[in-house]
Length: 368
Image (tube, rainbow, N blue to C red):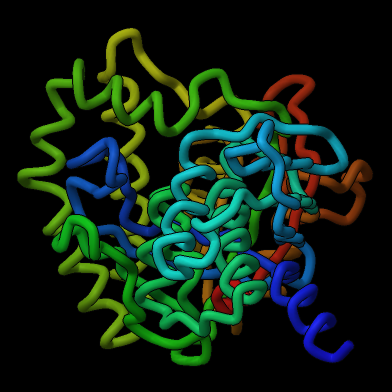
């Protein structure tokens, strides 16, 4: 009886995981290899905590009883309780694990994947990074493989390029070299520098063009694209690394904003043009510029991924100050007792502008 139970348990693998979002300071925009999902340039990002925004994934892998009719694996995926399409990238992630656990190739298996996101997906909030990193950790747990962070990051990359960074604690760099082995490495852990990230959601809808399609179109049509790869990105990476080493927020913030502007300039130079930002995004940029001007130094920096939602970065010591600014400017209806500065900034808000939610993150652990 004991052997029979062991055999039955060997045919069932289960795991659960949590995947965080990350925000790129130096952007990944352009693939060197479409199949391997390797980048044309290195990128640097912050992994955020999972107190409020995350992807939760569970998987049940079950051996299918011998059947002449069923020769292939069955893969089912639900996202937020809705059945979802199984993409070639999800299939490839599973294939990577089948290579590492050969017994999964002897018979067909059923892979039942359930995923839940606590934030809007496909809207520029890094949902693919959190979901794919979570899936990889989940399968690793289920199969009890205990893979290294490097290997997990490498496999996550196949699901979504930016997902390789969500495996890493704190501040990471996705290194382009290595083709099959390309993965993210840690630059600094989450406690190295007390940085906070404020996400302001201004658009909860699916963006018109996906990141994957957008970067491909930019590579094919943007004259500025190659100039960015050749002359801009490495310069920004060196500046970011220097500012991180010295914890120089003035330099850090400036290069983050210039990098974001440069990335979106490439998108606008794409044909047909891609404009991920909206009027609310532009207003938040103006708010950051005005706040920094008032404080006579850069205390807050904006960056936008391929979407309209804003990520604002600042040192923890300025958290209350910046939080109060944006509470008053974006969400406070009553203008009584506000400073002239805040009233002046608020007066420039877009007519009927919508600001749905504001969340503040600390730096966090990688997917777990």
